[in-house]
Length: 298
Figure 1: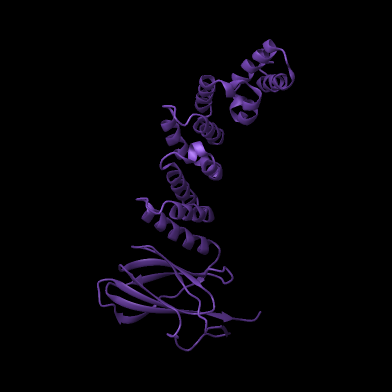
Figure 2 (figure 1 turned 135 degrees about the vertical axis):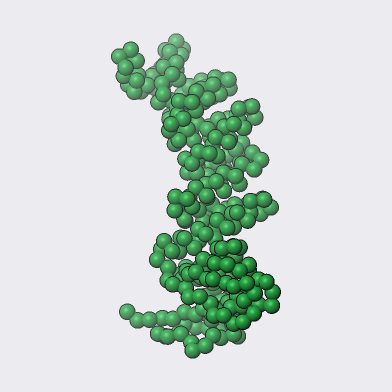
């Protein structure tokens, strides 16, 4: 098959020989055919079970390096090979370069669970936070906001002392807001100006006159993600909201730099439609906003 250019048939036949033959010469010849066939690089798991590569470190390392070169234009296959190399050869000198290339390969983002569960890879200093943050930023860029939220949150939860924590928090805030907007969030009005804050910062007091725990997300000169407790004394209003804002309910005061903020308010239960809007907060100004639940019919 090889001599007439039927590479796929040659590969399939050689694999059958590896699966069934017992003659050492036939096995060696079949293995040679398999290893020089480009299809082998996308069939790593089966190949490792059938060939003697798993027992020969140098041969396996050379084969994987060859596959990384031949799969350079196929990021999906390349990611599989890079992961296999790091799993088998975490201490080889080439591993550092392979690690960097894997982080730069967006196809690796589909393997985050696998990377976190493979000890030889998960144990690499700083690797998991770096690739997770890179994948979060990639997901945000391609407007996969749910993927970005999951990855930014993983970084925040698992790398709380990392120097890039602020960047991750900023990304999480942006992605939460964009995800809500993408899902058709309601319109959030500008908060009411109540005077001066008494400092160079803008002050926003938020009251929760609802039976729902709220998440407040702000993205702008500074990112904030806060949770505001539900009100034990509040219910749902029928058709129209209250005539004035109750102040005897859970409240949150935020001191932030002045500027323009994208804002999200949502129930942490997910049972109520979120609201997003743009708030322009002046230097030294104070604002107030209250949230409540209104039920309608139809």
